[in-house]
Length: 362
Image 1 (cartoon, rainbow, N blue to C red):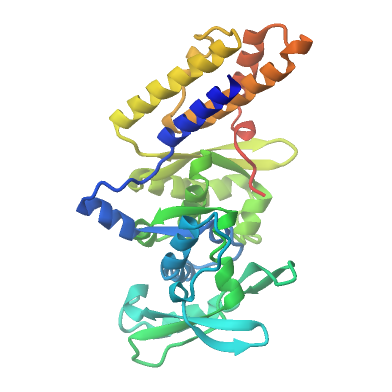
Image 2 (image 1 turned 120 degrees about the vertical axis):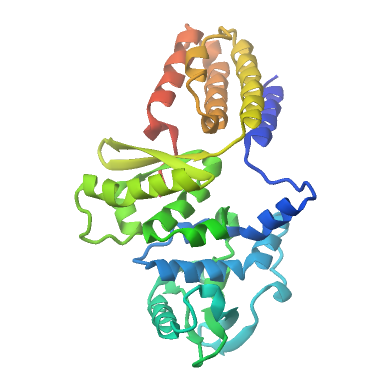
């Protein structure tokens, strides 16, 4: 019986997850071209990046799409990415190969007379580092790019990246996400763009918590925005406003203080009324079956269920299934005498406290 419920949960998860399906029309094709795959490591990169730096990183990610999509497609096969899908090797150094990505200057959107600014941004990016796992299994910090070639008046520039760094940008096994290239390039605030990438990387989890210290370190805020109210008013709230007004993916947030200070992000997405109703009915039926499996009242959680946002449905079912599994495992010892009370207490605590609901980013 347990495996039947597990299968039901997996079925509901497949329905509720935000996946893209090919309907064969031009709108889908345009969407796929605009949708970029990116590894979570990029969303979590630490550094004091300017908006221009982030856009350069975005373009690098764009040119890695064939390799990224190959890894996702063949994720169960431990085979190397074919060389034909990788940027060509251009040099060999003591640290290994260097690969070159050739990009039309027009893609950076700086105009014909801003070559000097683009060179300065690329020079600055050479000092930005990303974590890389060495051949000995040790984590090292290496420059995001090793250099570039951009002759005066050239229409194409070459960005040089070490092979080890490039491979770290392909670590889909650590997690990956998708985002809209067009929407990302429309953002004019560096913090908002980074938060956009962060919430996209946590979308399938429904949200996440992050300590204020880690948030400050990841965004390299230094001595800026020391006060919590300044940080939220200058960084979090502007990002919340822009994404909620213009983007299909946005967030709500709450602040918590326990032993540490936390920001908890709840990731939300725009759905049609028809999609929401279908998912609600499916989730409700699953909840009834889970409750009935341990003899609990099927209407026990009705008051909480009607308060759930669409994004809460899948995490809610996962949590309820976890509670039901615990009851089934421990019921024989009569440690749980009032099943209804136990379930209601556990789910109410989950519902009220976002900090206990979502994973804390490490």
